[in-house]
Image (cartoon, rainbow, N blue to C red):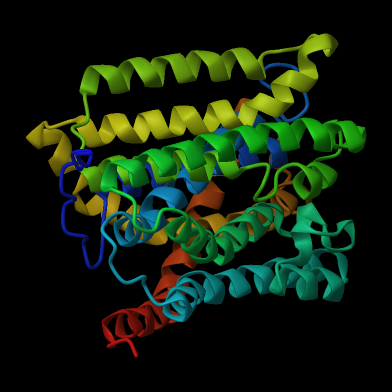
Length: 394
């Protein structure tokens, strides 16, 4: 019996993949998180509901995870489909550690110092729990006002830990198969991951109904690496299309982005108690789909002017500082919002004008601090990461 025709050869993997559209989308996502938190600290309710701009953060968080899947899964897809040696697992873990942890640890300490300055209390338990990424496993380590955004770091860390191990399992399952069969198996696996993630979210809400109202509990039992797995699956799917050299079609991307956006707006607008559970279960899936569709669309645009914008120095600077801004903007907002009212009497709190001033001040201080942290903390470890990347394996 004739062997099935193989899929088109994959493009050679890049040694240091860099995607301008990913940088732009990451900068946008962190800007949305920043705006959401300005509204929270400024007590702004544009639509008359508590934290009514939380949908911005939901979209942004899924964007982070889609990007993680896209940027990190490609090297393993190449190894699986082309029967190439796997990247060193220890080197992968070390490079992820050097890229993420040093600045993350600084963000923890900044949050703890701000808590001590404002309230005279040093949160030892909070610090210890966050240093080992335990905030995603126990309410004992949750105190979101200290530095709320750090909850996402546990999910990223879990993904980093599981990706090489899961890739090995997939590789063994398709050993000896044709490339076409391997691609089909990977697609089926990604679909299964999405199905399991949705089923898990229904089960988690059934076992812990309080998660519908308590954000700390929601993060622990629902918004973990399993509950958010659809976002990583969508990112991996984008990486697979990239590695297979599949041509991105702009019209399809625009249509998918529009459908995803409409579905996301519809889900976050659900107020009926009879449909609220379904909305909470599917919201992250739809946000991840919309994010993936937007990233697909950006990669399909062939305009030289658009490419020039994505590769501009401004986007590069924003992307460079984005991680630092994400990690320290919340403590900055705590200090600035507290000082603006208690010392300077700026207000009224809850007004659009106050939030604009708060946002501008916090953006300025966050960017300045991120620049300092990038130069004296992030860059030295990134140089070490590059040396690890260039070192021969063995």
